Image 1: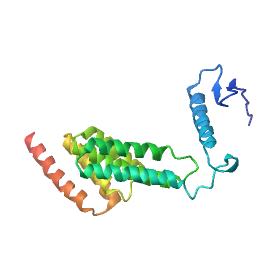
Image 2: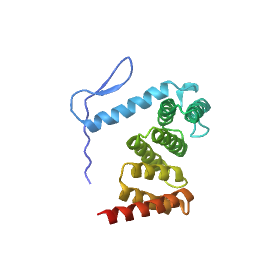
Image 3: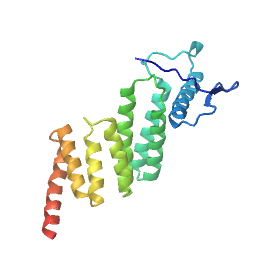
Image 4: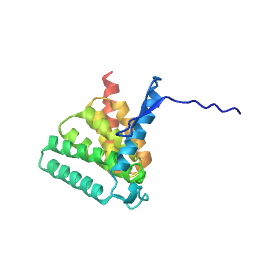
Length: 203
């Protein structure tokens, strides 16, 4: 099988050492260079000797502590009824979690994001921001499908409130497949059965 080598006209900034596409328009190449340059900037900020990445574990304790602090601040704001502030705090924690260095455990990031998205979904729901709540619930489920009954329930409830009953039933059914006999999901499933029956009669 013949292999083809293509020489790309890349430019290396002498000051920042960032690579850029010098001539050929290519969105795929630009995306790869953006990722590579971001990794380079992350390596420059390391507190390790010779700026060598540490092993995957343990993770940076400072970042973990800051994420926990932001999540707890969001929880406090939610309990006080300050839902916009809770959304802001959860958003800051999400940003900090998704920008963890790529060599840290992906499972840790998914667990953090699953809970944070689910919490922010709840805050949106408290403000009746149903579309935003659904998006966050979906993001939570994408991060963690099993052991995330709250994410499944909140997504389905948002769909109910938007009048998308059939989708809500599909969502609830799928949630029960992953979560088993979760009480809240079962209760919502029964509620939806009644709503769908009345809707059918109304037609």
